[in-house]
Amino acid sequence: MVKATINNFESLALSGKSLGKIEYASRRSVGKRSDTDVALVNLNGDFDTVNIQPQAGFNFGMADGTPLKLVNARLLATEARQNGRSAIVQGIQGSLLPLSDTATDDYDEAEYDMLFVTGKDNKPVGRVRSKDAFDSYELKMIRFEPILKRDYRGQLDRDQDTGETTITSYSIDFIQDKTKDDELGHNIRIILSKTEFERLRPQFKLRHKYVPQGLKLAFVGNEITNWTIYADTLVPVEAELKEPTKSASATKSTSTSTNNNEAKGTKN
Picture 1 (tube, rainbow, N blue to C red):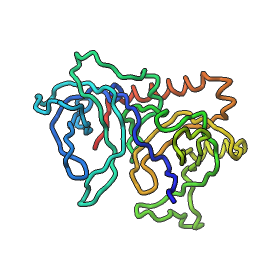
Picture 2 (cartoon, one colour; picture 1 turned 180 degrees about the vertical axis):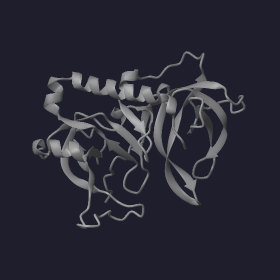
Picture 3 (tube, helix red, strand yellow; picture 1 turned 90 degrees about the horizontal axis):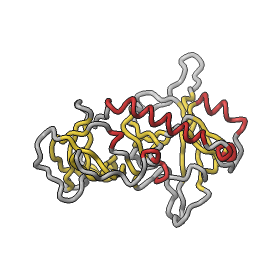
């Protein structure tokens, strides 16, 4: 029997503009057999770099420091070799073009409503399109559980005096009401802060629909899931439908947060 996966998305549209200033650095060979050529680029005039798999015919011989723009990019989970073993890593594909090229993304900037962050410190990287992962208006809550604080060895961190564990946040599981052509559907798991969860807990109802606000996405790449999703809060779907401006405000807030951090980039 095939198990339904959690937050296991093939790819999400990524806004190249949200990465900031892109400059070509060098050619690299990556992939499970090191047989995929990617462009290593610097972000925002700093040491921050990302690998991007460009379009066919890309000129890997261009001068170091050549400014480029990224169009119709996709953020995805891909296979690679790490320490002699096969591993799942995050990857970026898209068209790397001269700044003078007139090509633009197929989606409007407002479509990129979810912030892509690093997994360790939630540092903003860029913006992605949540619709490629799930339908925010079709998420039915089915369970939740606390996430407990752990030490550097992965062991539960207990209070030395009481022996009690510490709750840092809560993971909330949803199923999509509409699975379309996907027979299994997607199990969606969203992380909510301890404070916000406890504030909302009295309102939660089993199998009720809730719309996440202030979405963030981080790469994980383990056996259970490829991505971790965070939200600032959850709004009952009927309240969100009555006041659609809430979504616009959340998108604007996310966009502003990314713009304020674009100059920072990310490290590989």
